[in-house]
Image 1 (cartoon, rainbow, N blue to C red):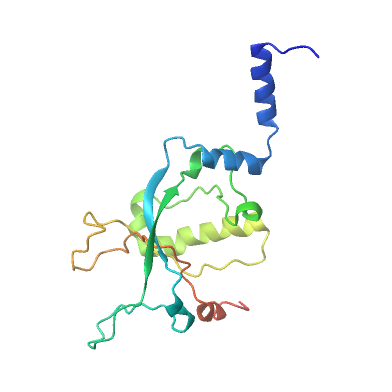
Image 2 (cartoon, helix red, strand yellow):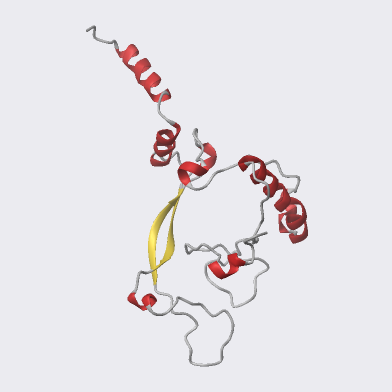
Length: 185
């Protein structure tokens, strides 16, 4: 068998790289940072025996008793947040459980503080894109939240903020009982 030259070896390697499946390419992209990644910390609920008998809770109002405001035992873990915009292979719903869809919105950047425009224009645009992508008969938005970081965040000022602050904890945001309201829509 003939020995390949350096240029031929490079060409063969490029050709093999092009033949890599989309899933392998995505893994490659995610494993090879391009400078757009952000390393941060995120809180997760600790796996504690307490939660075998008591549900985790947070009380977001003044109870005026000795009841603790929460029983959350947190673990902090470093995480890497990947900027997906530069990926050559985009994540697919079937492979990754999420998907990024192109969307040209008619909402101007400055209007993303306007709850009415988000609810009446942007949310329907998103629903339309999701409905089209999945060829669905119907799609529902459960809720949306405007999050704008206050300059003092993550240190609380004791004052109310105009918008929700970024979250630093992993969460799903919905409970089974709340989902019962949407079933059968």
